[in-house]
Length: 169
Image (cartoon, rainbow, N blue to C red; front, side, top):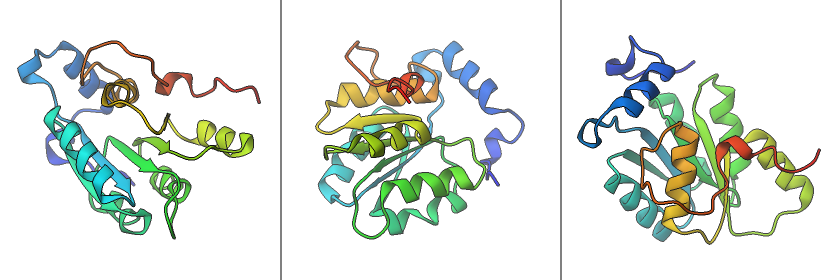
């Protein structure tokens, strides 16, 4: 079940994205983003940066704290660390996708992943960001997942949501 915010009840995600693409910079729709990590410094830095881009950011310190959040709010995007004690990023991803929402999920990690784990992440997530990454790279990945240039428009190398099938099966 997807919980819609009242101002979006009468329009679908596709129409919202069209509104974003046609809007002037001062009229851009702010997306709802859930940021999940077990490092408070990363949460603070990324949250401030994404909020500066006019998005509403909710943070969850660790996977366990994130599990019930999507049931309480509608999120356009969840950005989660992969390796966290207790509840990991794959569990968060599957819970978000399991509630039947259209929420996009980006997995980020600083770990070197075995090929099988990387394939799993790329198959199930909408985007992947290996740490360390620049804020510009994150902006581009987020914009790609949300379907528009809603963040920093400067070009950079990225792993967009549309190319997560890059690894051979």
